[in-house]
Length: 258
Image (cartoon, rainbow, N blue to C red; front, side, top):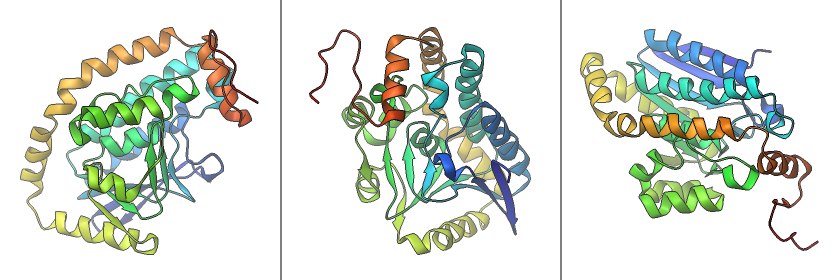
């Protein structure tokens, strides 16, 4: 079973994250496979990204953070940027079909896509400061352009979960549909895009990348800080607490009540 599956339906390329055993969280190798899938799908008219099982994507694979290999983790961090950048630089519109939880880097994947349709049961949110990381690839920067700075800080600082209906109201996503109608609604949106000029859709997409381009240097500096913090006490404790399903005991903070 491949970690990433691509299915062509007419002029629409469906790219499916296929690791339901870990909520479609990706490691470096899976990030590389996603980059190649998006790049190859540029021959289609529209690209759709979705997940298998109950999650859309839970971001980076957290086992790497609780016992980090610096070279591997650095590769995953920068692989994440290259994956999101591949979406932004693709000449084709990219739709996120959010079938379930979009958490951490999975939410940043939604932020990076051009359009997003969500199942009504889908949830959204960041996980960074709660698990020993920070959402520097969209959650702390580009999301503010989509939902406003105060809302984006709430999302990235507090690590809450938000319902699809709230995400729609805030401008985070474009539409919410019943779970059973997600693929049909996404297909209808893709078919509407296919009636447009591909040349001028590409022009419109490149032009709309203005906010992405404005914050790209911030992505790189944020990744640099994350790389320097690999193996830090906070990273190891946050990831360990998440994997062990317990409150984190942050260095220098009073222990949480038992």
